[in-house]
Each structure stands twice: as C-alpha cells, then as structure tokens.
Length: 133
Image (cartoon, rainbow, N blue to C red; front, side, top):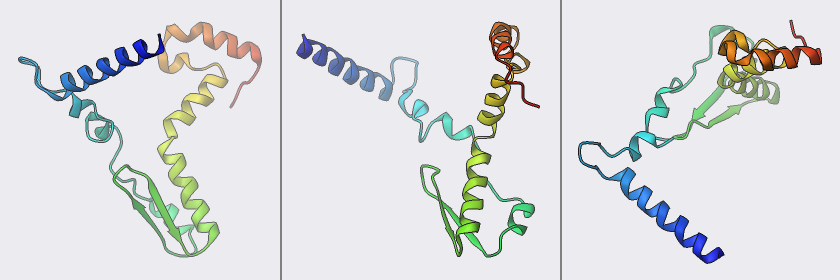
C-alpha cells in the first residue's frame, strides 16, 4: 500500500509541475507566478528595508547589513551591542504586522481587524483576562 501511495503522489507531483510550468490553452504558465522566490510574493514587502536616521544615531559604530537573494539579512558590526540592536530592529520591522496581530488576538481585539467573524474568538480571549493596553 505504501508503494502505491508513493507512486500516486509522485505522478501527481510530476503532472502538477508540468501543468504549472507550461501554457495550457489561453492560460499562461502559472509556476513562475506562484514561485515564492520569483513570483508575486516579491511584491509583498519592500526589497531592502532602510534604517531611519533615529536608528543609525543610536549605533556607536558603523554597521553593514547585506541582504542575499532570498532576503536573509547578514549583519556585520564592530561590537556586539550594535549587532544585536540592528538584528532586533530588522526582526521587528519584518514582523511588525504579526506582532500587532498577536497582541490584538491575545487581548480579544482581533475583530477590529477581521470583522464580525472573530467576535466569538474575542469573547473567549477576553474571558481569559489577557487584556493588553
């Protein structure tokens, strides 16, 4: 049974790859569009976040941030304090929406963002008493 399941999923993967990477009638190939490293996902965030002047003023020495092709930051600093500060700033700036969403969810205010569909969730979270702010 395991071998049959393996071959079914292998054939399904090959057929999916073929269909996504080749034009089907009037529908263009969608594989490149859906690719997480090349497709529309690249338009979701700015290419390389820049540091505001307030962040640069808090550093005691120059810090260099190099972004590779997959948007992974490599931080080079002359001291540990600047390195950790810049690393924390980059992490927070890339996760700003997630952190806001999680604090709203914990305090029972997620319906402010999602709408009426989350009212039951908000009621349950407010009963737990984790109000923030």
